[in-house]
Image 1: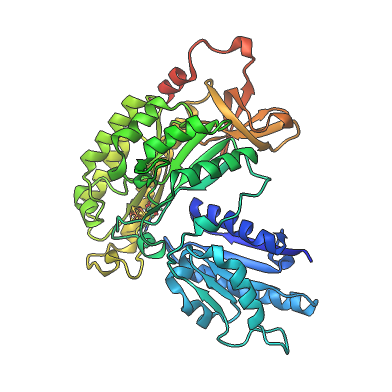
Image 2: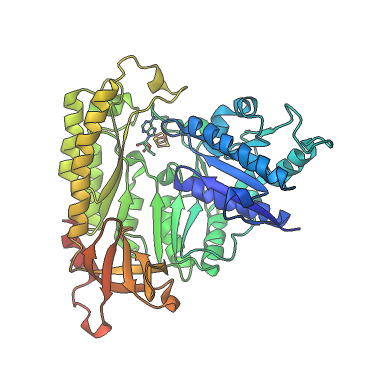
Length: 473
Ligand code: 5AD
Ligand code: SF4
């Protein structure tokens, strides 16, 4: 009998990837996709713990699910409720205690065991009324010796044009604000052959762009096909050569410390590697960087960017920033603003520091008052937004290669992505999905650009690379 699964995903792209893999793992049990929780025989909340109020959001969502399940039960159906991801890892049994409606709590490293957990959860329901016996919830937040990656089925055949592929997981950096080393565990790199196989399967299923994922992806050091280890630069070059039909490669998220020569060289030498890099710096102040345990000074970030831009002059940058880390003074914050002004970002994410229980930052005494954080965040975001708008504006009149991904807002229109991940709408036919076309950017809207086709005989003589180089400059 066909069953339906609804997964609600919070947080990062790794969670998006994990959600897709959980769906793959459950497909052989007969689970197809539900459009809403009300239609679902099983609901998974794939949670994020990185910033504020994560667990509160999960508990209020669970409250809603309890009501939805009661309605389904009245109609003679039922629902299994699972909490996955980093809140599950961090809170564990506390979730089963506070929210008895939850059947399964599983961490990010155990989802290959989901079929077994579903079976156990189903058995745990009492025969009498279909309700779970108290304390019968299934909890699996181990860091098991076997890798979940060795147990994952092939990706579903209806693959999107742009796909994620996790190549690395966990983190050994222990930035003092961050929960990732605790929730995702120690740094782990998948072997090269496993990654190549998955990349080929994704391309065979329709993907044309692959974003290599990892919490600290450029720390990648996976087992090479003939022994030894490869770093990320080598892996990227190999994927570009070995996977036919793969048009674009990206990777995220990186740490400045792991930006090595080989990877910088890949930016110069691999045309499939897109000229857009998310490289979080967090702060421009050496004092704060030190307190954050980022293990580098601001100067080092400037140097890396300089070398990357020398390797790939049309490279555009993205970053993450935290304001109001404990001890951050007005002068420290000014150093962050200066870094933003000097480097220039095409886009960025910025956050107020939020205390994560169990991390060293939580115990620091010189916490910054909330109103100061608010005010600094506003000032930083004003600068970052202005840079983003200027970057997008500079695209108008230029020709960008756009990978067409899916139908756009209107009939006869498709939407795709520029090298810089900007969404671009353009007149195109359905049959062109998955191809890269040259588009002259006509207009910028709130969330996307729009472009017109450049007839091949009128293509500019200058390469896109030269044209784009000016836009980023
Ligand atoms: N408070 C605020 N922002 C945080 N980030 C991670 N932990 C915290 C925290 N405790 C931000 C960092 C990181 C991004 C994914 O989330 O900027 O790069
Ligand atoms: Fe967290 Fe730092 Fe590791 Fe990034 S590098 S996941 S911020 S500990």
